[in-house]
Length: 220
Image: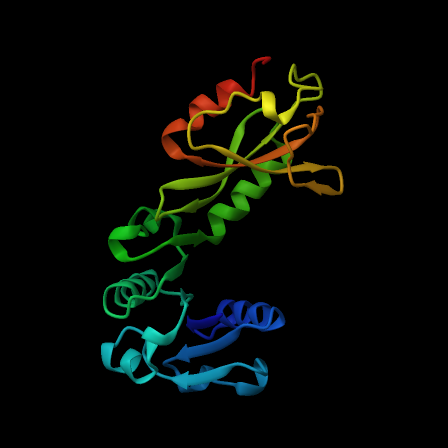
């Protein structure tokens, strides 16, 4: 996969290193000459360019990339990068960093964003996930389809204990994608039985989250 990352600060470099470990082709796009340090991310291509400028994006042939990651420390810049990547270069996947959670509402398909990643919100969600039992915790939003990655930890005395996955009466368009049980990550099969303390990870549209919450609180 060919990935362009706008912004070669600490976040952009960290993303690049992870992608390189997974054998993807990575190009870092940075407008500040002082931030360009090829030795910091061996294996990545570096381009001195402004990812908010159409001419610079044409110069790096952004239309040939599979993914654009807008990872600068400026939310306005990340929105512009996302919009240009989608509307001018038809990049199939755009992931954008949200620095200020108050701006998160802007990071949607209108600005060309497929996935918005808010570090403060994600950290808060992980704290909630660690201490909350029986309630849905939203971990991430997939803007293009208006779906969320949500987690629910079953209480030890859940009436769902012993029930097979196939017997769950999930709302429309909801998918159970993982069961986390202790140190195990289980890809759920229809005959797998739930246990108290299980962490259930779903992909669900926002408008059925309340219905999903109710379904996971009653016996089936």
